[in-house]
Image (cartoon, rainbow, N blue to C red; front, side, top):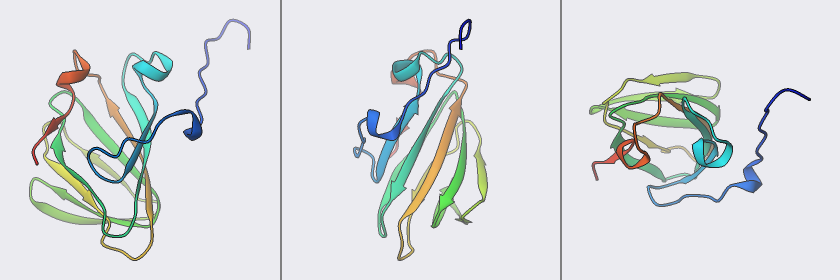
Length: 126
């Protein structure tokens, strides 16, 4: 539409990141679309996979379970999340996401606000 600066990205346009476990695709971010307040993506965890423990010193993380079931470990406390449930992970909370089920799990995540620099936004703890 003229006068608007809409940005659309498809999953097949962004590379999968498997460094921290599972398959993470950051769809909308400062790098992919020039966002200024946060970023959003999709993660897929096969049975037995996990996203390793980490925390975000500047950002809240919002998670929505699209399909499957995951276990979220938040500062050592475990909770199960099922399809169509959401979770808010507060700033500074150590967390890991595990798929202990027999089917794939897919989730959408959003983080905001952005850290002052990308290298300051994510701290691995394992």
